[in-house]
Structure formats: C-alpha cells, structure tokens
Amino acid sequence: MGSNLSGKELLERMKRGDEDAFTSVYRQYHPSLYVYILRYCKIPSLAEDLVHDVFLKIWEIRGRIDPERPFTAYLYKIARNHVFKTLQKVATDRVLREQVLARLNVGEALSEERVDTKEYDRLFHEALNHMPPQRLNVFRLCRQEGRSYDEAAEILGISRNAVKKHMVLSMRFIHDYVFRYGGVTLAIMFLGKNIF
Image (cartoon, rainbow, N blue to C red; front, side, top):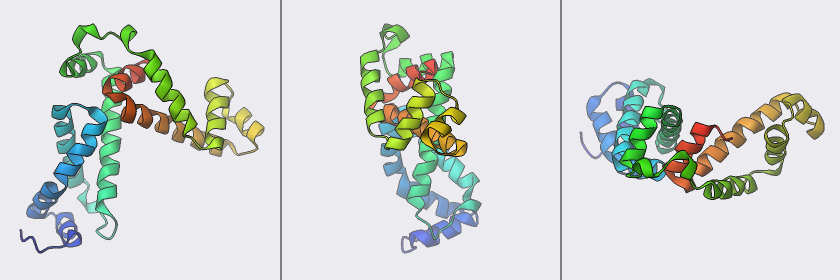
C-alpha cells in the first residue's frame, strides 16, 4: 500500500474491506493507541491485548466508519469503552481479578482490606470537585442522600430524565477519574465493591 494515500483514502479503502488499507491504519495508530490504553490499565501485556481487541472491533464495524469525521476520536472512544468494560468484568470476576493482580506482581500481599482506602477517598472527592455544579447536586441528592430521581427532580426543578442523565454522566466521570489517576488496582477493587 503506497504511503501517498491520505488518511481519508485509507479509511475509505478499509471501509470497503481492503485488508492492506486496514494493515496501514493498524501500523499508523497502534503506537499511540497502545500508550493511551496503557495509561488506563498499567499492564503492558494487557494493554497490547486490548489494542488488538480494539482493532478487531474496528475491522468488524468498518462499514460504520465515516472517513469525513476524525478517525482518532472515534478510535479512542471505542478503546476507552473497551478498557472500561474489561476492567468492570475483571472487577466482578474473582478469577480474572486474581490473574490481573498477579500480573501486577502484588499477589496475595494485596488483599481487598489492604487497598488504600484513603487514596480512593482522595480521588473520589477530587472527582466530585471537578464535576459541574448541577451534576454534583444530582449526585449528592441521589447517591449520598438516597433520594429518588423524582425527588431530586422536584428539589432541583429539572426533569426526571435530566436527573437520570446527570447520574449516568457523574458515575462515568468518577469511574474514569479513578481509572486515570488511581491505577488499575484501585479501579478493580472498588468497582468490585460497587462502592459508587
């Protein structure tokens, strides 16, 4: 595949099922995607596996790709969602969790009771401080005060759907924040506890 093709032309060829174009796209984006995923999962071998998964997904859904839109943003969104789902699965599967913790070389020395809850609390409160005021109000009413969506909607003078949307976005933001700054161990343990 000639290197004189533009990114758009490559994507158009890949969309039509051109495997050479897919290989070129893979080679072009693999290094940066690997670094991006490694920031989330912290385990080189797992990051490499996840990169391959993401490109397999790209090939499977290539027909949906719009060459006119920024491909990098699309690729990273798929990667982020895949990493998130993988870590959630790891968090709720005891065998997988033990395998991942073993790969982190923390082994049995790191039990759930020994996870640094102070570090988690710090990250959790940092995440709250970075949320928009209305989203924070919704989160505090529903999660910390135990109010229903209807009650929160009435108190804040917004619709129930708006409350629900704020809750989804706040949960996603907190998860992302813990993944990004706390590392995979905190993310796995606390997702496993469903502490949110």
